[in-house]
Image (cartoon, rainbow, N blue to C red):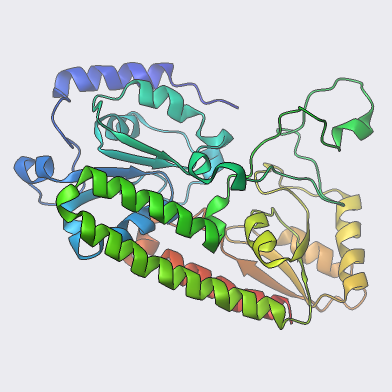
Length: 347
C-alpha cells in the first residue's frame, strides 16, 4: 500500500524554506562537525544496511569524505518503514541517494519530487539489476498474503494461484541476499561515487574491485558448500526472503509465507504440509529469519514424526541496526555467518 506523504512533504517544504536548504548537506551526521566541514562532504543517504555497508567499503579509508546515513537504522523492517520529515529532508539535500525500489519504496517517488539538490544521483537497486530481478512467488504449501493477492472477486480461486500472461506481479525486493547481485550493485555504487567525487575516482574503483573479490570468494564458498551438501532443500517455518540466494546455488525451498508477507499466523494446513514435507525429505533443520519468535517453526517441528529438528536462523539483514554496525557487523560478516548456518541446515 502506498505511503501517503502529503503532510510530510508539506513539513519538509516548511523546514526547507526556514533552513535555506540550498546549501549542500545541511544535515551532517558526524558528531562535532562544523557547518564548513559538513558542506565540504558528500552526503550519501541509503535506506537499508547492505547499501550503507557497500558504500563504506567502497569509500574505504576515504570514508571521512562523506556523511553516510542509513535511514532504517533501528530495526524497522523495509516493508513497514514510514519516512519522517527529517528523513525526507535528508533525501532532498543529499548528493547520492540509494534505495531498493520495490513496492515497499513507493514513497520515494514523492520524496524525490521535493529534492532541493537537483544534481543528486539516485540509485534504484531493482533498476540496476534489470532482468535479474525476480517476481515474488507462491510455492506449494505457502500461505497467500492477503495484502499481496490480486483482487479477482468471486472468480475461480485456482486462477489466483497461477501467473497470467501480461499480468503484473510484485517484484521480490530482497536482491541484496545474492552475493552475485551485490557485485553488480557495488559496481554501480562505485561508478556513482566516482562521478560525484572525481578527485578520488581511482581510489573508489580500486576499493570496489578489492571488495568484489571478497564477495566472489565468498560466493565460491557457497557454491562448494552446496555442491558437497547432503540435502538440497531448505524449509522455513517463517517468511522466505532468500529466493535470490537459493536460486544462485540451485537449492529448493518450502516456506510458510513469501518474503514480503505481512502474515504472522500460519494455517493448520500450512503447518501440516511443512511438517510432512520435513519428514518426507528427511530434513534435520527448520529455518527461521532474524527477529521472529520461532513459534511457527516450533509448531512445524512438533508435528513431525521425531520432533527433533533443530531450529536455525538465517539473517536477511532487514533488522540490522546502527548499534549492530557500531559492534562491527558488516554485509560480509553476516553472509559468512549465514554460510555457516546453511552448511548445518543442509547436512
